[in-house]
Image (cartoon, rainbow, N blue to C red; front, side):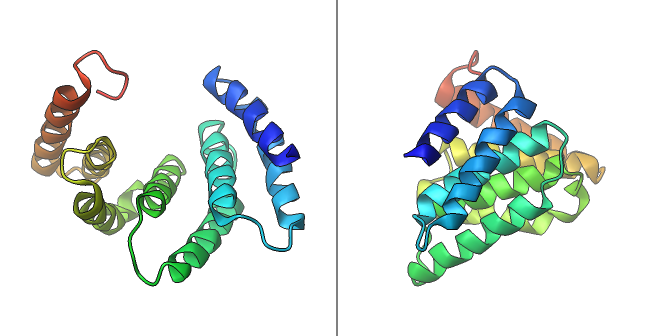
Length: 172
């Protein structure tokens, strides 16, 4: 129960834009999860995902949390016998976002392409997560100075998100 309390406390700080203040309760929740003999993998991924994003947005190191997320994701994937699940795809996408915030933009093109292909297969091409991943890849193209690819993909993602969510939505 304490893990959920820490997660909720951090979520409030996170929503208020106070990323540094959301880090300690999330780190405490991760520590509590480590004490459990068999933690729930979904909860572990959710908490470590929040911690890595909070750290990245606060400009703090993320490598150890990203590693924990990758290990939990591997456990979850091996328990699913190769099936691609929306939750796993979300975690993979958010790991890429954290790595991009950490300055690894120039090395992520292949990983973004794989996630977009999987999101398209599982959720469809006009899903918000798919379109946001496409926007992320357009940012990768921008950093690589691949201007035509950046422009085309950015326009495609923007048009899809505008149609899906409405032009005034935060994610457009």
